[in-house]
Image (cartoon, rainbow, N blue to C red; front, side, top):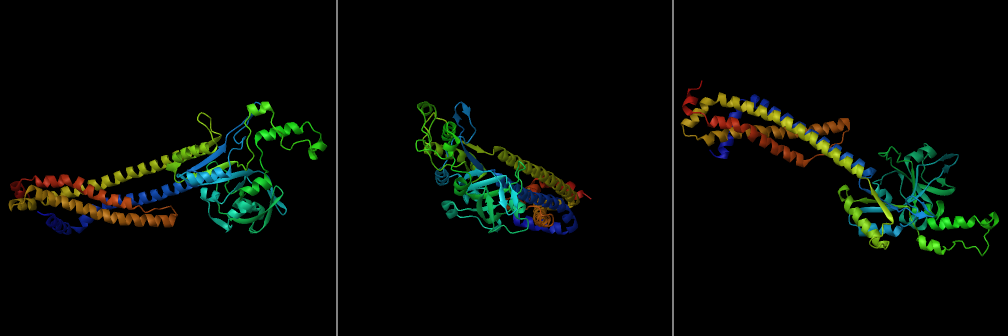
Length: 456
């Protein structure tokens, strides 16, 4: 019996009792539909989790200046200013695994508008690339400042939703003037809401301005630690009048003594920054990005072998581990549900096929009597089982996809269509038909023709 004839014969046999065939496939339909629905909703939830964690820094890389020691006192990270805006540009240009990077300069203080004041948790100076690194490119009002504003140190800024609420309430902040540490700034935009991060801190309580403006107009030029310490020591030996009006014999930047020169490295005065905030192209490329950044900065800072790094790189490994564990948990859960559902449907297929063999024993005997071989009988019943499962799989795929769309629309759950899941569901339904239909087909092919003809 050829495949084509086996299919035609199987369809004719299934048409004899369509209700039973429909009920037989119901188990497969429910199993495949539930699998497709859960996989699409689960995939949507996984994508939403990935997006949320990525927005909080799953692929973030933070570069700090190294700590420093002066006069026997060890200062924390950032005690020595070793990072420059040129380092940030070089990272973007020469590190293939890095998507983007932005320099950061911090300030802390009070913001005033009219009769209201507020102390935001973050006053940041950066470039327009900072919003791209944070995946924060949408605005409630206005727009971001430009690269020209950064170059010219213009007094413009964008504010978060929390700052806008505290200072302006229902008033539009765009084109209004606020004062940051008594320096006037024009508000050019309001960032969209970001919510709290994993540590519970309000990410919308932020003011973002050009880093040049924050550095040179708000927080000062930021001398290195050694110069600050030396200046403080020298100024303590002068009276208050000479501190305000220094005479010509006092140098504004005192030279280091021979002991200081021997014990402490003197850093050249340059436009330094507090941090570099970078983002890898994907969480999987974080490690390669770390290696590339480390090698590049060591070359730029002319650090020889054996000399420790003058910078520190941190990434959020815990968030990556959380992402991996969550994705694995969802995948395993869906796999278990799929196995149980398809197992129940497969048992139903086997049960009905065994009933069919019992009901059609006399028919099997007649076929064998007129020349049908065992493989022909097996092929016929196996084809019926596969057709039932494939039909149930197709109906289940349609119902599952439709169900996931309805659930996503009504409950506002994230949903992501998965062509791979649909293909696998179709293949699994065929495999279930073969696996659970083999035994009834084998049993039918092993019937004795004489006993089969006598069967009542």
